[in-house]
Image (cartoon, rainbow, N blue to C red; front, side, top):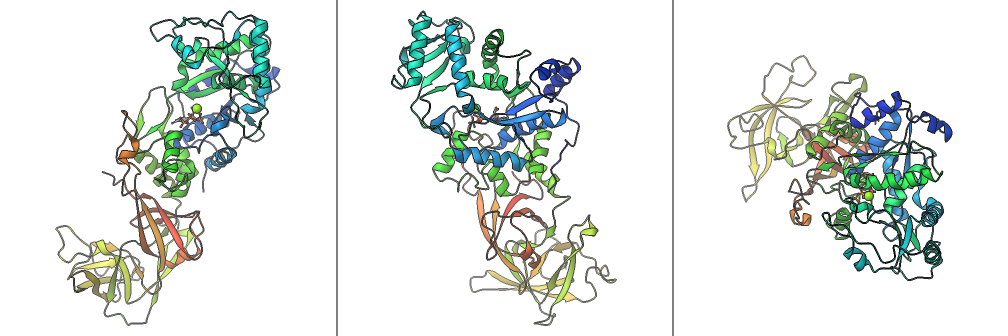
Length: 571
Ligand code: ATP
Ligand code: MG
């Protein structure tokens, strides 16, 4: 597996331009020295552990870890774990696995927002003491009712003028568990008339008696995302806080909170800079954790790692390589404009990664018997093929020729259409790496189904021998000796959805599931695959790229998944 440690192309994008400019101005140097950091930049990838990571997250991971790699920086892995009801250790572990698998390391820089709960709480008390936060005791409905709209200012809560002492007492009681869930919230006191809704006294704490996977039952109040995120960035000395565009309107709040705390002497300037980029939208998949969870829970797929899922565990099991996903993320680039990326771009990245490195092998996926009538029964001889056509140093594979072979049913046609060069009565083709044969006819069962094809081989035409080219043919087909081939289960995957944008325009994404997204066939494989390892990838000649399933491929039963066809055939 080749994981580029440095990006292949030298990338530029607007975020790199910002960093280049920052570095030329030495924007962060003094602050980094003050906080004792030797890194030129510090980024972070901040997943919420409420599901498995998907291809959209890969874009963010490659971006954040890629920036750190290329600018002598460090990228933190930070779990944004402030919603205990939806989060779990299972998700934490799966996220760590996925980031490592993609090829990135956070070293000692693993953080949890929950580790900051005490600090976040102390800052909240400070905001109250400064007269910049208050406990609001309105019902959620009342709060919604006074929030205003995009065109109308909101109204002050009757509790906005609560004294500092009363708010502080209530907030401490909230922490101590003296109030019911939902009875009070803590809000920042900013501006109920702000044109930016996020600045209309945002709620920063709510009461939730929920067990947290790391802090247990220690807390019954939990901080909100907007409040937690910016403070976590500042505590970790992040320089560039890169996030998706939907947070653009939250940036004034991000800056407001940090500026207050910097004015209070808690943080050094310059403060972390939030920069937004367009999220990845990939056709034929959904990339919302909630929707992916629905697919799993309603058993519409076989789990988070179903090879049809756009989760990183799913893509891994499907056969995608870390390098192909990194390549994909480089190719799609980073911008501020929302767009859709066609699924074929991901498949092409896989092909471009695997073509130069994947060993070749023969597989017959839709077997039909071919009988070589003039080759002695019971006799066999070795044929040779390169492990990789462009890497002779990788040597040869050897498999047997005999009088009974498997070929693809599609490679025979009794009454061929124009331009069909494969087997039909009277035609000659080359058996790849073997002999030229001439088709003599076929045998049928009582229903008229073709059960075997007959042919004669032409001695002296074996590939790699001096007479190989003595008979010219237009067709070249693959085959396996029936007595030697390995039986295997091969899963031919197709797109999970039929609609390129399954969840756009208020559609129910479950109505456009592709009923034929997987086809399982009993196939025959080249005997050399007996030694294949789980998760080993091959190019099955003429068919595409396949991987030995990392879960199901056991010694007794070979199971291969099709990652992608050789060419883009989707219509
Ligand atoms: P979902 O909406 O599916 O739950 P999320 O954005 O809430 O996803 P997080 O765990 O918060 O999930 O995401 C971690 C990081 O990954 C965030 O910085 C987020 O912006 C980024 N991210 C999530 N989805 C995408 C995407 N489709 N393209 C690029 N980055 C993404
Ligand atoms: Mg999120």
